[in-house]
Length: 389
Image 1 (tube, rainbow, N blue to C red):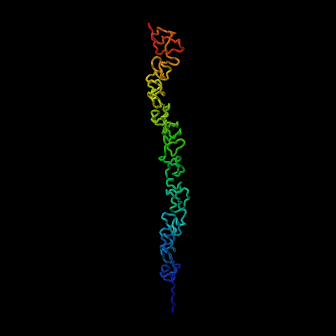
Image 2 (cartoon, helix red, strand yellow):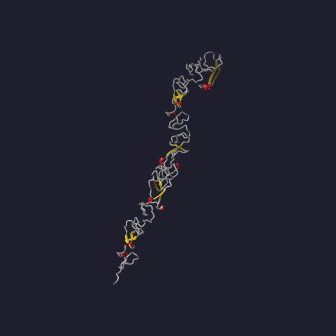
Image 3 (cartoon, helix red, strand yellow):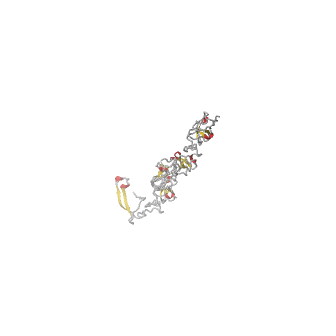
């Protein structure tokens, strides 16, 4: 009796045809499953199988089923797999397939991170004093990639701001210069200041001024209305006063009597002197002026007859025999204390001079008389001597 052949099962081993059916391993459908391996697709050829693939039980890899793991979270990109380095990227890709991406993955490469800084005032400029934080992306605290904001509490202060003039000399544009020390300061915020040499708080009218943020030792005042910057007593707030030089103290282009604002206290009371004998009419109440004006030219009112220049209180004598009080002392025809008017008595002619050639010339014919009863000179003004032929 011929013994019966015992059938040997096909196993996946070095492609041997263990069951002698002319087929081996994956080509033999009878190959034992216990000798097979589950292989997975690796479409991106990064040696990591597709995480979503259920795999195929095979003796050997194929062009489709290539690897024995299925840990690749994106089998369309060879840069994404469990062996890759997590890097920062805008789409927050999980490159190393650990279910964490970018800032949520502590293994993310520092070389791909950016240092972000706090921006408390949200002006897009980071705090100059902040050390920053290395991150893939910004967050609510670390917002910007620069830290050049010199005041992160005020949004109007940052390197992109315009330097403006301000009382606190703030460095708005963060260039370490402020106001007049910063050439970029906005001209629109500056003021034209003027010289004030006399220190009266009014700028020199003739000065063109300087456009500045602040005053300095030369340019002090924001107005140039001082018509004489060499005298502190002359400026628009001064009081116009009477003076011999006719100075325009209050800078209104009017002086003394022409200026209605001139101080009355500085005026003089002038009286009418119609006869121009230097004394004012005793009946005139006068008028206040800086200077003699019109007929108001006298500073005293002692003239008892302002219609005659021969009558005034300052005369040294009273004209004799004219019946007029020429010296305004209420007495008439009195002459003077040293030369009284002739009041009667014997007169003696002491000298007679006559030059026929001088006929009609008072200086060429004269005579001298005296009163032997007095030692005084006889005042004979207006005396008429009548003789007989």
